[in-house]
Image (cartoon, rainbow, N blue to C red):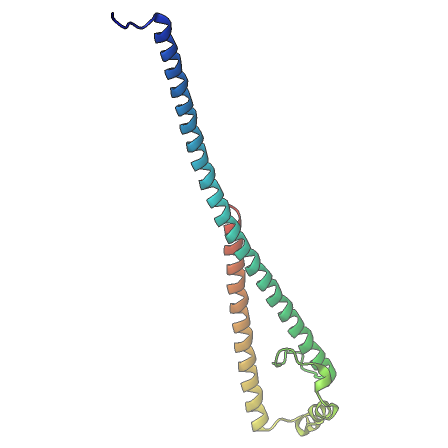
Length: 162
């Protein structure tokens, strides 16, 4: 006797086959979606790391700016404490306080022989010329430094906005 398949059994096998194919397609779609999500997670992690670096750099630059402001304040205080008539900035070692300058040094500045007589010796003129050139060099260097910091800040700012 021959074994024949009933039409119901064939239809049932086809239905099972269709459901199996559908499940495989769903599984492939889920795997593709998972791969996309993994890629997005990696991109977010890279972006977060870059953002943290930029925040650190901004914090460092802000700290540097505050230090510069404090140094400028110290210079102003030293000038005031010594009653310097010339208002040009004085080069001072960073973080010096006015209490570390003995009052007799301030008196020496104000009572120099050249300021009493109103005439300057050749040595004083040479010293003034030298100090003026050094001051101009220092100001030029500070301007260059500020321009570099502005350029860095601008580059950092442009990287923040994609």
